Length: 115
Image 1 (cartoon, rainbow, N blue to C red):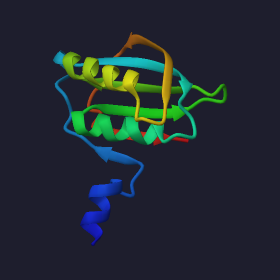
Image 2: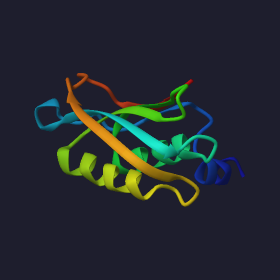
Image 3: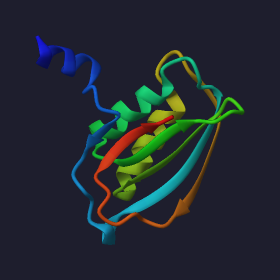
Image 4: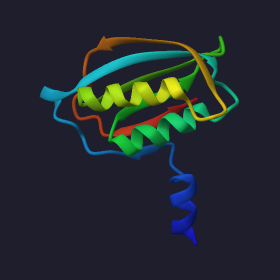
């Protein structure tokens, strides 16, 4: 039963380990998403999608109603996550997404939700 719960809802940890990506081939982006992205499970959606794609980093709500995150992985995988973020989880509505390249964090292998 415990394994079924984990499969449906994820682990009870706020951080999930993903394989560390080779820093030579990695990119890291700071991403801010605006729209209906709070109170609709968007951070959990981001964590689930990032974990499925093997992306490390974190996601957090901002006081202005937007969601910010830092995501790190292979360039093509980061691009795929950004496309998924634009589509949202079915409850969210993304009206604006901004991203900037930032420095790669060496050895990072977790993706978490910050509070």
